[in-house]
Amino acid sequence: MNSQPISAPLTVDVLCAGFACHDLVFDVPHHPGADEKVRSTALLNCGGGLASNAAVTAARLGCRTAFAGYLGNDVYGDFHLTELQADGVDTDWVIRGSEPTPLSTILVKPDGLRTIVSYRGNSEGACAGQYGLSSLRAKSILIDGNQFAFAEELTAHTRAHNIPVVIDTDALRPQTAALVEQVDYVVASERFAEEYGGSAEAGLAQLATVAPNVVVTLGHRGLIWQRGTERGRVGAFPVNAIDTTGAGDAFHGAFAAGLAQGMEWEALLRYASAVGALCCTKVGGRVGIPTAAEVAAFLATHEH
Image (cartoon, rainbow, N blue to C red; front, side, top):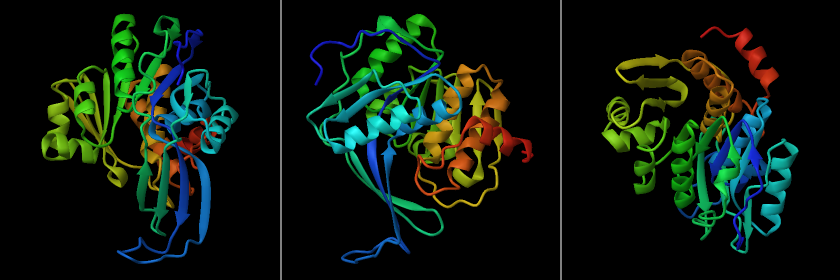
């Protein structure tokens, strides 16, 4: 691990901080049962992880973007770092170390639904105390609840400097429950909202008591949102979903990008929804992430 804080100045539109892994994506006819062998019809190697996928998304959408998180000094870490850089993501705030790069094996069925097995190792906490945050300048920041101690350092810094922070909440854990009270925008999965409040609607309402802006994504059913006492729903764009892996990450990255670009609320939700939908049209969470031009063309031909 780094023994000295990273103090290099970082000026970006979007900083995405949290989890990175390497994805092994297998196409399978069905998810295997106990003690069953299944032959895969295709294999894809690519970088993955909530915050790192979001960083690639924001970069492809035209934002100056950086990723802060951990990658091991191994073949998967080298591969992922090169992939991030190829997409124009600033990697100066990536921590490298001897702990292996987290790895995910993803089994994708023909209907696009997937099962994921992940190995995270002991890299949680690797980023705490590693950054000179006084050198950070950003228009929006995305955290994903991983590298919790660093996320707390980051949210404390952003509150003092009026930088809007978005949290991507997937599953309810003590650290994510604590972080939702420290951010400006909570973008939660349906699972998180249900675990937080008993149902998606109840979770939305409860989250809105601790955060000023809340979105709950509902997959192919779109999303619901609340800002103070104002509430609404946005439907999903109809697409031929091949693989849903990374769609939520792409939504979050687009949301953070839209904030950095100053989008109005409803336009922001529509934009992020379009990016998430387009991500589902190709196999592999990162492969399907669209460019700004692709999103503009899609929105021009799809009423919502």
